[in-house]
Length: 70
Image (cartoon, rainbow, N blue to C red; front, top):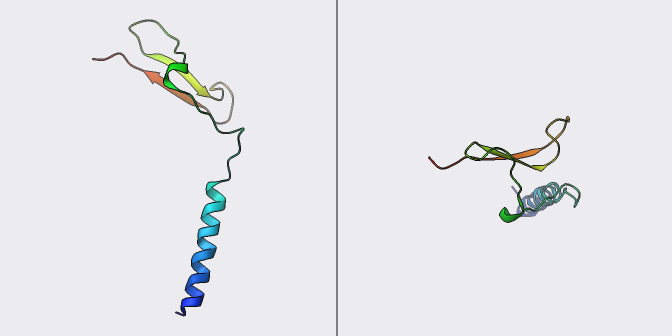
């Protein structure tokens, strides 16, 4: 294979991968620090926090469960 064709194919693949990786916008990005997470639940039982979205609605959501140490 010609090196010119190989370089062109590599550039096209790299551009395609870069465009897909940067497709998120600020509306879908969430940053939460551990001290900002508010857990709900009874003491001694697993506690629950919803970090993103709404688990009762269709669509994406992120839940985090905290278990007590064994």
